[in-house]
Length: 96
Image (tube, rainbow, N blue to C red):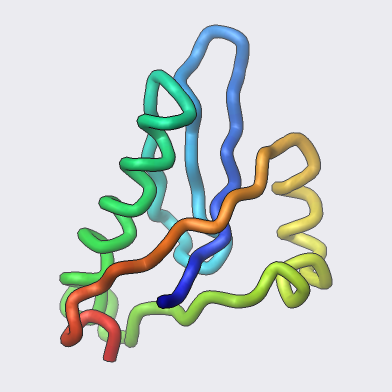
């Protein structure tokens, strides 16, 4: 099963926000870190279902944490974030 790296950010008066360096524009949030992580898996699956229809491209493949650590944009985004691996349970047609 593939895993996507997620960045979790929390401001003092906000929810836990989750973004995915390999899936631009896809975000979610939760009032607790557990809720945010649960929603992270759901939003990835939802995004994959219609990705090619809306973008004309295949759903992005996940990079490893080692690959991401070499990416300057990731380094900046991850500086004040919790990093988590989110399992990706895509339907077969979305994963192609």
